[in-house]
Amino acid sequence: MKQTNSVFKNLALFLLVGSSCAFATEIGVIDVEELNKASQVEDANKRLEKEFASKKEEFETKHKSWGEKKQKLQRDKDILSATDKKNLEKEASKLEENLQQLDEKYRSEYTARYREEMDKFQKTLKEVVANILKSEKLDLVLPNQAVVQYTPKVDITAKVLEALNKQVKTPHAEVAPEKK
Picture 1: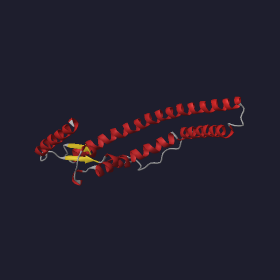
Picture 2: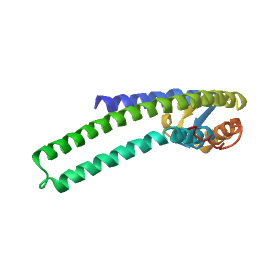
Picture 3: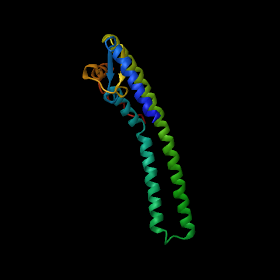
Picture 4: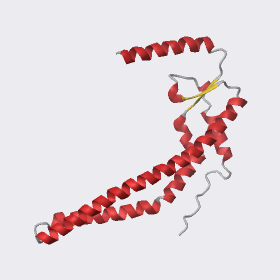
């Protein structure tokens, strides 16, 4: 209940302060989800997909091998000797453990690389937004998630996307083939 009251108080304060400043403040709003359509984001995703393709393939191969061992164990558990059954269980267990470690490693590597790519994009995005802020004489630019409601008049998403896509030397450039 306290949290709800706090939200309403903050909203009321925002509306009171906002309405008194509304005539003096030029605001732009960006639809953050739409920024995923920027060439830089699409190209980064392609680079990451290509970079991690061999690791994904390796994981899938090992996963298939593990699945086959588990299937064999299930299928042949009644006809295997106790020793063979125990060895197969150990192999399957070890493979599963290795798969989990490999999965964790690859996810960690992918996440780190994804962050690197998005950090580059964020830097470019900030520059583009700063330029639009100046050229459009805006006082404030907000992400659409921070706004309760807005009119299309203040939506600058298309301008941001256009400026981002102009910065790409060759639109939707092909990703260089992986070196072997």
